[in-house]
Amino acid sequence: MAIDLSESMASAAKLAAEIRKKRVANQIQQVTNSELSGFDHMAYVPPPSEENKTYKSLKLQAIQIRSLLGKGGSTINDIRRRSGSDIKIHHPPSEPEGTISIVGNAELAQTIIAQHLAFKGCPMTK
Image (cartoon, rainbow, N blue to C red; front, side):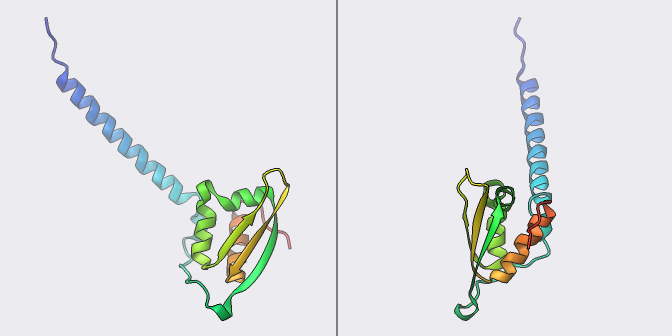
């Protein structure tokens, strides 16, 4: 006695595909709503001209640097894009503090960094 399971398997595969599709859509929505939610109102800023370039160095705690980096560097890359600045992070993993170097529109980059850190609960100290 042979049982034909092809219809059941096709229906199960279709259901699994729909579930995967919904799960991916939910994950995308969560990422959109979490990491960069404080920056949605800020427009992209082109890199500053040579005469408007400034340099600034910030000293931050390790927890602040980890928050600033974001998952896979997504947060710092977004801040770079929005400020139009070149931002470098100097932080040996074993050290309690690190340094952030900003070249470009340093004031705007520092403002965005300060807003992000305050949003994440680890504000910059003056």
